[in-house]
Length: 320
Figure 1 (cartoon, rainbow, N blue to C red):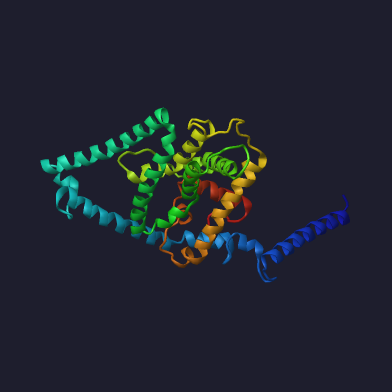
Figure 2: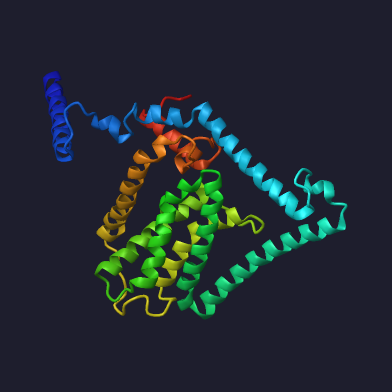
């Protein structure tokens, strides 16, 4: 290829890019002064500046301070409930037989409750699978109320706008209100989108967020619950473990149903989240979101992957 031909090809590519940019900006109603490429990464400096703000020392110190205040507040209440003295550590009272009884009672109760819930869920799965979606609904409402009250105290409640919570509502509502009568139609497409999303990004989030089963920690158990229950519920429906979940002709999965429909569902959530982001979250730096949390956790696998991708794409430079 000659130099002139190379320049013509490059000119044609640039003009094509400009053409599509102009068409998209016209469709969005933006003026020529708008920078679409930096807006994609959040205007005000693009991804680089946004991540720099998220990772700023004042924000990190604020988050640590809020978390410490929360721990101190609840630690004092816990000490008072167990030993009667909010100023002394429980371990300092372990010689007291009454304190020993209370600690043992709390540990036994929390561990027993966790085991009983898992056994009851297994009982429903094996004996009465049709009742599992209702069990899902009841436990979801209770756990979300407890999580909101806990997270609200430390300004973590905007975590509950994340996509995994959105899928919770989508999966439980579809399983209870929209039965699948055929391989096509609204209910069928809704279920397939839930199935793909719950077995894809939501299930992978168990590893990304390092979820674990710890019976003594309601927070850890709740986090594991919200990532595993949608996939489990959709699995029961897909393979007709819940009687009547699948039409007689079975279910198929086309490219549109596997990719396009789930992306539309995701886009609906993303549009809602961006609205809350620009109108509420950006105006309060004390609010803790999943994005802000991840930027403070360099050991988290999701942080490592995201930073590596951004550096490779040139969005960030190494060391930022």
